[in-house]
Length: 255
Image: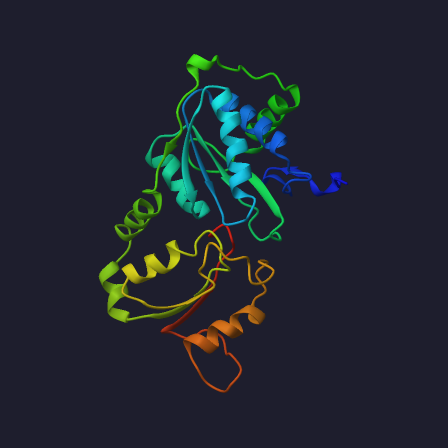
């Protein structure tokens, strides 16, 4: 039986247990409300690696198409990449399907404005009002747009960052980096970015088709121990990270 308490609607988005409280019907309605709020135009859609991503993507796309929007589907991307791509292609908004550090059975819709940032309180209030009214300007079959698929977002975001930093100085340090991506949204983008900076990369949990290996909630030292053992082998307990030996634990949405 559905647990209504597992549905959370807040500025952080609409979160719930996929298939129970976060149903395809609810996602379709919220996407239609968001498309109505944004107006006709392109809406960028990306996901993390949770098993419910395909179901919820199709539901969101159906809602957007029903009100005349053009979904631009990025696939699995980190949240910052989706934010960057909203701005790059001058989209009307974006929907990131990710529940960040929540357990795997959860998922969520995170709504972004045309500037690539999360909706402000007044904007989210307007969106939820539209959702609760349930009156969306559905388009006729002749005005339904076609989906666009765009696999350039990660590479474009990487190049944007590389042009904004001192790539030569970083390459000269020859960093060795152990990265635990928890098989989440950044499990491909993060190693590729580090390698582009000349880092020696030790990858831990970077398979987007595998389940989360642990609770994705960052747990500090407990999770860093395995990374430290891979990056800086030795018999002693892991000390705080030192220069030249970098460790990082990603959240599943890629932040």
